[in-house]
Length: 568
Image (cartoon, rainbow, N blue to C red; front, side):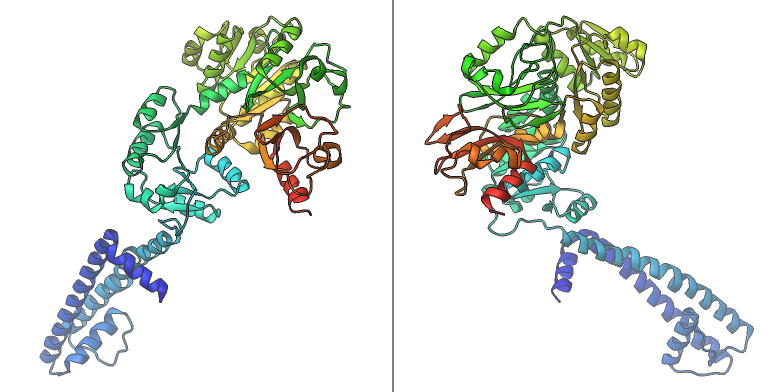
C-alpha cells in the first residue's frame, strides 16, 4: 500500500503523467464511442432481418466480435450483416489488439516504471545529515575521491541530473541524489546549510552557473571548483568559488617536477607544518651503491630520509637498503636544510641534453611551461602541428609526427635525454611509449600521466619511474582542502596520513612497533602538544595523546588500522 500511495502521489504531481493519461483517456473514450455505435448498428441490422435483441446483447456481440472471441451464438443472415461483422472484426483487431496495448504500455506502463525508478533514487539526504560533501558530477575525480572519503568515514552525496546515470550510480552503491544542478531546491534538499563542502566538477561554463545558484542559497558554504581551462579560474572565483583547481595545469607541473634535469637537486612535493617534503634523485651522485645508514644526510644536513622510490614504488626505510641510480629519496627538512643539500649535489648528474616531452595538450603544455620557467631545455613531440605551434615558445625544438617513429624519436633526443615525460591522454599509448622508450634508453627517467588508476601497475611494469593521474591529483587536492591541510602529492595512490597514536602503541619505540615492516607505512614525524618532531630513530618513543604522521597508501593504512587500532 505504501508503494501504491507513493506512485499515486507522484502521478498527481507529475506533468508528464498528466499528459500521458489524457492521451490514454481520450483513446479509451473514443473506443467506447465506437463500441456504442457498433451496438446501435447491430440493433438496426438485426431489426431489418426480423430479429430483436436486448441492449446488453448488442454490447455482448460487439465485444465478442471485436476481441475475435466470436462465440457464434448470434449471427447475421444477410450480406449486409456479414459485411458489418467483417468491419467490426477488423476494426477490433486494430483497435484492441494493436493500438490499445501500445497505448497502455506507452502512456501507462512506461510512466509507471519511470516513477518507480525516480522514487528509487532519492531527491533528499536523510534527516540529520551534516558535515557531508556534495559532489556535482560522478567523474574520474569523484570516483577516486569516493574511495578516500569512505576510508575517512566522511559522508558524501553525488547529485546527478540524468535519471539513467543516477540509476547506474545508485546500483554501484554510491549515495546519489536526483536533481537539477541549476535549481536551488536541489541543494536545499541536499541540506547544503549543514554540508562541509561542495565540489563543483562539471564543465567550466556550467560550473559558473552552479556556483551562482549555490551562492543564492548559502553565501558561506566552501565551494571547490574544477577548472579545465586556466582562463576559467578567475571567472569561477568571481562567481563565488572559494577554491578553483586547474588540475590539468597542476598535473603538468607535478610531472615536470619529477623529471631528472641538468643537476641533482631536491624537489619539494609537499609541506607539513614548517617542514618540506621533497624528493631527491641520486642518479650519478656519490650516494649510489651506499646503504641508507651510510649516507649520513641527517648528521650532515639535519634532514630525515622517510622513504625511497624504486621504479615507481615507494619503499619504507629500514636502513640497510642499497641505493641505485634509479633510487629517488623522499626526505623531510626545512627550506635551509634542503638548500644546503642542493648546493652540495649541484655539480653531480650533469646532463645538458633537453628533456623529451611526448604529447603537448593541456597537461603537456603546462609541463613544458614549468620546465621552461626553471631553465630546463625541452624537446616536444606531438602529432598535431597546431599543438606544436602553441608549445614552441617553451621548447628548445619541436617535432611534429608520430612518437612511435624511431627516427623521429632519435632526432628528438631519446638516446641522450635525462628524462622522458609522457603526457598523452591515452593510457594505452602512454604504456606503449613507456615500454618503447625504456628499450631505447635503459637509463632515462620516465615520468608519465595516466587516466585510470587501474593502469598504474602495468605502467610501472612497462618502465615508468613515476606515474600520476588527473583523478588522483584532483581528489587529493579536494581532500586536503576539506581537512585544511597543504596539498602533498607523493605519487599515484600514496598520501600523507595523520593519525592519533593507538593505545596499543603508546609507550613503545618505533623499533618495537614494527610499523614499517608490518604495514609498509613510513613514519615521518610525531606531533605532541603542537610540537613536531622529525628527527626520529629506532629508539624514539611513541607518547600518549600524540599524533603520528606517516606516508603510504590506503591499503597500508587499512593494515595499520587492522593491526594496531582494531587489534586483529
